[in-house]
Image (cartoon, rainbow, N blue to C red):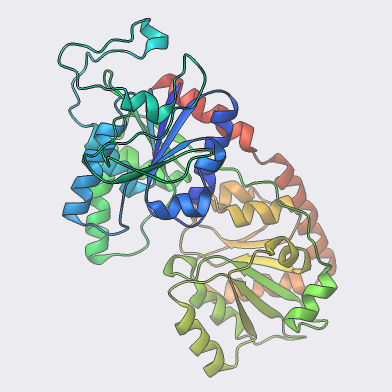
Length: 427
């Protein structure tokens, strides 16, 4: 099978999820191409996972000229795909527009029709086979070169090669579109209006929509999506902590205080204003240390508030030792406005840490009774839940055991690959 993934700008869970799917599909002998901004290849190395990477610039904000170029590039590069799988709303909408109105009746790929010659009038060339490799020989092809534009194709062992930004994937009949929605809108105004328009494009154009939370599914069904199903988005198996909890505590200056850990981008969606409200106390016993791992646009604002109010919060920035932080944490907290299936929460469950999270999006299904859920925006409820855990060793132990049991039940990478293959078979 030939699979084309399309994704936009991402530095987190969406990119890691696509990388995991690429690895699983390539391991099973499928041909994979990934279309997206160069930044995602630099961060996730899809070429290193065995896929071909084709650079298609996609901004995270609407841009008529660039969006049109992306639509045309997606259209040309996916002609020989058996399925196109877009991740994220903007990528899904651009892919939907790119595949819209494609004429049926193109030549089928060789392994299914036994024919290798193009249909009359078909502009297909050998560039498609070079981009994907030749399935008949089982060998990946060289990076194609095409003077028509300026995309970049990268693959295993390849150096960057300048090629036509409209390198064709091949040609056949109508290509089915699967879209996985990883996030929901948490802002209004003009952004909300644009987001709503993209949702309608996805609902109308996608053959199947995979969602990370029930509320996303309900919204897409209301907009007329034909086939909506839950997405399987597992977290990678966490690595073993390299440092002892005592070493981490010493680094953070926690002493014997409980550590309340939050992991996530410092952005509006994560509800950090509620976390800071909760951290303010009052605390009947020893004041916990709230440690926040992550960076983002709210960094300056949060730092100023922490200093002005003398809050017991330390901002750790981006960390590559989250397993170490988890092992040292007394409890891990999410104060988010919305979450789908946050990988950080899955990781906390898998390593058996007590969790407290807001009852939003896909969180209740993910936690499944193995943690404490509080309403979004309720700082008092969040603070009370933290008090219950840090002030009661038996309760903390009970939650840790429940988290470990739930973590052992969560799907793994093989489950995710099997799930998408079943979806592709239905498309």
